[in-house]
Image (cartoon, rainbow, N blue to C red; front, side):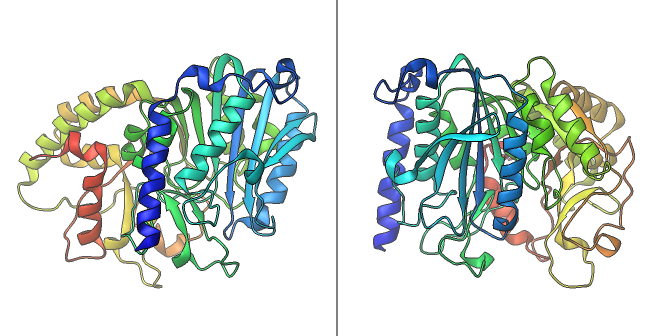
Length: 420
């Protein structure tokens, strides 16, 4: 009970801090060297939530980031926050220039606190503190900020509270459990993530180097905190993005996102669906989806939608026998294409195409599931693929849908598109 109360108090404090933020909060700290040494034209933070079973690849990606830093201007601020096993409880924030760590600071020295004493990267109090410190001490003179979220992702999915809120979405942190038991992982959900980011400078983009990020539900939550979201609706490969190649593009202008997804896509032989969403269009997508779902409901009545043969981007069941009721994150357009009238689908697609400004299609993708039995129930085609997923409520007597049908109601997206 004490832990729950303490967590609630810390969350209230965090919300109060973010609600009172302004651009003035992110001016350089005059006590930390010369202003010219700290201010860059642009600032990008790569947030590595690696205190989990991804610890083994933190070092490799960090070396890729350092290699990529050799290709950017001295005027750019490339920052990396690292949390992993073996950091002796002292995660740190570092600035990278010309392939080297030029300066770093620990959470303790940043004055960052924690909800439970474990300094989890997924703790909203920790994340708020790290981002606030990073953007305050390394501000962008042009107001151009980018954020890369590195780590685990599970779309919008949530888990019930056990002692502390154990939620799923981004950044699984196992605390001091080096045996990496997933049941002990703490995540940050999307409503909370969006709340943290609302207290930061407006971001040019969020790049998600984690699985299942490109859900319409997630994108709608983030519509007011960044201009673009870059990521995959599916599971991503263990090695993630090729940072030695894409770091310069993280600071580029124009259609920088096209270069990022091109290099990511090509680095793994095209075995990963990717998309880029312009968040200012998400309100229109939500309204168009609501209208499309009204048409779907008229077509199918009170029955649950038949999802047979549709593209799905994640499979929850751990058994060796494929069961459709454990498919998650269906391709949004594939669903509407099948169940709505043609004219309604075309209107919806027009709204989506204004939001999805670029994408790459894959007919299969790298996954930790066994592709030959989990993903053989559908075929990816240009007509069926839309680059974003959406949850479709199903019979609560099957799989885990009783829980998911209720959990989805916590998302802002549901409040807009629900049919009540």
